[in-house]
Length: 324
Image 1 (tube, helix red, strand yellow):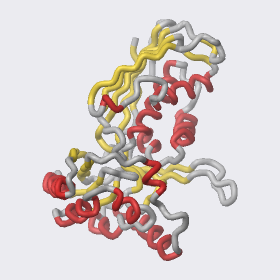
Image 2: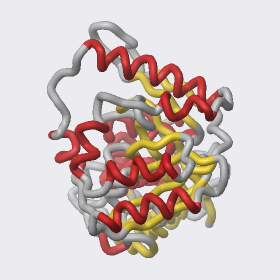
Image 3: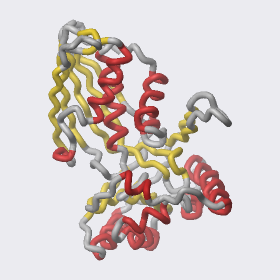
Image 4: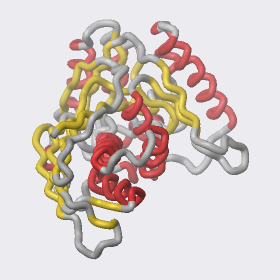
């Protein structure tokens, strides 16, 4: 990988895929990359400053594409927060940073828009800083910023990724990630026009679960990995069952429970909330138009418009290009 030769202007472009996490029973630990990608171009202008220099870095952000009006163009942007965290670790920062975002991952959808921003910011800032952090370091920092690996890990690595967070009592001492090839299935995403804050989705969860529910999810997660990695789509309907979060979150979204049932009636192989929602994901053996239409009609019956994406899982994670 080559870096632009000018000491005063360095430009990188990063593309990062959308992701769907949980997939039913894989609560906070399993995620899948999808072939819908944000593209970020970052130009750093020098000379570089010491990170603790009192002169501020001047940031300019321009956003186009899907839900562009929802993306902050100031320091609240997670991409800028991630870039600044990288510059702090590097000990230096550019005098000015211009960022252009072509946004394709809908915002607040459960499709990993925040993870895509974090990953893009870290990779771009690392590149213009001379790559002081390794890929493993970047991934650990992304997980630390997001709080869990289920979206940022597949955004970085592509494919289907299982993440195990460090645990001081029972181990592991370090983050464990296991990347698997994604399934050869179509993915239907239907996003209702309904604002569901992650904080509200978390607040809906009970403080404890029963032993029966824990066993239910553990068995389904094992079966889900078997189904997705071993080409056993006939197992998906059982494998994507969940008792930890979906029974509490689906009722928060008007029409979601009906859309969930409608997807199966239209031929879906497996259905789940995408992360905390409000979007629903359905696996299909064909392109999935009928499934998308059935879910959209269910949301419409509840008074909500919706958007549909017909996608495929992606084996390709974040990609970085540098140029003069």
